[in-house]
Image 1 (cartoon, rainbow, N blue to C red):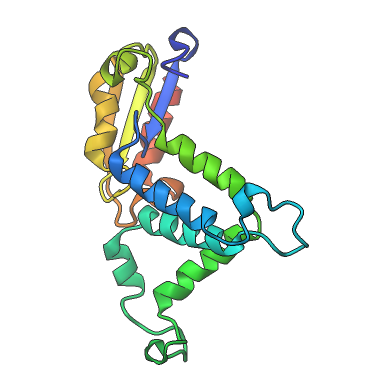
Image 2 (cartoon, rainbow, N blue to C red):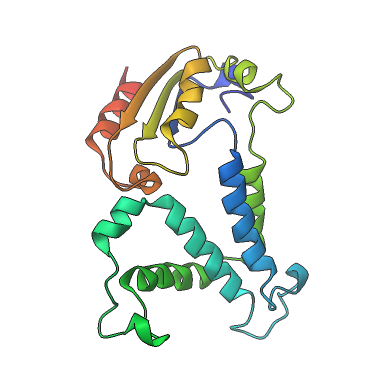
Length: 207
C-alpha cells in the first residue's frame, strides 16, 4: 500500500518482511508446492468431490513441516528437543519418533484439518513472486515512493527473512526507522510479545 498509494498511507510498519522474495524463499516454497502436487490425492487440484476425509492431506502436512522449520531456528529446536525420543517411542526401531518429529507432526495435522491445499499453493506462489519493484523501475525506486513514516524491524535470528534483507526496506524508504529485535526463536518471534516491538509500534502510532 505504501508503494502503490503513497499519498494515502501515513504510517507503515514492515516487520520481519521484505520488498522482494529471495532465491532461498522461492526454493522453500517450491518444495512445499511440490509436496502437495505429488500427493496422489491432489488429482491436479480437482479433489473437491472426494469423499469426506479424503484429499491431499499428506502433501499438505509435509508442506507445513517444511514451512514450520523455516519459521524457527536450529538453535531453538536443539534447545527444546535435541535428539530426544518422543515419550516411550524408540526412533531406532523404524517406527518411533523423536520429539522434534512429533512437534512437526502436530502442526502438520493441525493445518491439514483446517486449510485448503489449493489455497496453500496459491499463497506460496504469491510469496515467491513478491517483488515491489516489478513494473516500478526496481526495488530501490519503488521503495523511494513511500511517503509514510515507516518502521522497519528485523528479527536477528530470522533465517527466512534475514536482517540484511529486511534492512533493504529501511535503506530506501525515505522516512524510515530501523530496529533489530533480539530473539532466539527466528521468524515466528514477530508473533510473540516483545518489549521492543511494543515500544517501537507505540511510538510509530502515538506521535
